[in-house]
Image (cartoon, rainbow, N blue to C red; front, side):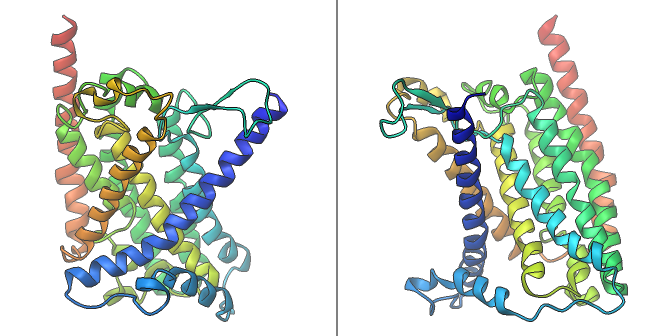
Length: 348
C-alpha cells in the first residue's frame, strides 16, 4: 500500500468520525425538536439560530460537569465501560458504503487521478463484521452495571444482556434471506443486487423483523427496559456523570445510525432509486448523488426512530421478552423457510 492510499484512508477515517460524531450531537437536537413538535410545545430555541448551537452548549456542559466515581466501584471497568460502548459503535461504520466513489487528483497534487471509494474498508464479510462488532457493545453496558456497585445499575445491565441475546437471534435470522438472495455477505454487492428492485418487496417479513429487532438492539422506546427510569432510576448508567455519561448517549445514537444504515443497505436499495433511475445518470460527473440518496434514506429512518419513541408507550419486560421469542423468532423462521422454497423453485 502506497503513501497516497494510506493518506486517503486516514482522511476518510477522520472525515467519517467527524460526520458521525457531529450527527450524533445533532441527533439530540433533532430528537428534542421533533418531540416538541409532536407534543405541541417549544424545543431548544435559545442557544443560536433556532437553537442550533444547543448541542455545542450541551457538550461544553458535560465536559465541565463534576466527574464522580463511586467509592466502592471497580475503577478499571467503571472507566472502561463507556469507552467500549462508544468505540464498538464507531468502528462498525468502517465497512458501510454510502456510494460508488470518484476519481480525484487531490487538488492537483497527483499526476494521475486516483479512485476514492466512499467506504473506509471493503471486506467480503462486511455484514458479519458489522453484526459481530455491534454485538460487543453489550459488554460495555454489562460492565457499567456490574462495576458501579449499584443494584439499579446491575438490574439495568442484566436486562440489557437478556434483551440483546433475545433479539440477536431473530435479527440474524431475518437477514439470512437477504444473504441467500444476494449470494454475498459483501454490503456493496447486496446493494448492487437491488438496482431493479429493493429487497423490502420480497423480503418484507424479514424487513419487519429486522427493523423491530433493531429498535430493541439500540434500547430505544418501546424497548428501553435497561434504562426504565420509572423502575431503575436511569438503568446501567445511573452512577455515571460528566463525559462518561455522555459517551453512553453518543453510543446509543451511533448505534441508531448504524441500524438505519443497515436497514437501507439490506432492504431499501442502498443508494439506488426505484426503476434503476441512477443508470440514466452519469455517475462519474454526479458522483455525489448516491451518497445524498443513501443519507436521505438514513435520515428518514432516524426520524422514524424518534417518531416511535414519542408515539408508543414502554412495554412491560415480559412483553419485550415475549415479542422477541414468541413473535419475531417464529416470523424470522417463516421468512427463512419461504425464501428457501422460493429460491429452490426459482433454481429448479
